Length: 98
Ligand code: HEC
Image (cartoon, rainbow, N blue to C red; front, side, top):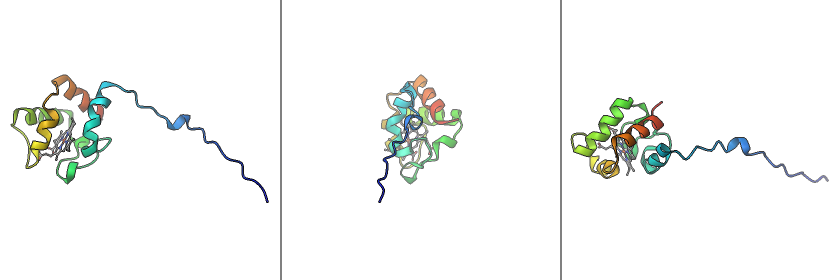
């Protein structure tokens, strides 16, 4: 019978800590619906936002804000974008869209 040594895995490398920059903080509330990297269709209704161009992304955000964009579920998004500045929209676009 032999005792098993407990292996302590070095987790340093796994803690690829995302710097708590503004864009990550701004995107946080979006992740619940759009996925951590914008890879999901929100509630099965939205486009995959990481696949939009930055221009399309910002245009959609501004459109939700001024009521000129959106589909059947746009009311959900209007509340999300209401208080965002154009600079914040650009920051989120840069965070999600590579
Ligand atoms: C409660 C769930 C929810 C949250 C939170 C949410 N969204 Fe959405 N989002 C949706 C839905 C649903 C749609 C599709 C709405 C429609 O019918 O126009 C959408 C659409 C979009 C679109 C346009 C894509 C398309 O289908 O035309 C963008 C861009 C977007 N969201 C970005 C964001 C960002 C950025 C945030 C955070 C500030 C956010 N969303 C937060 C549910 C959400």
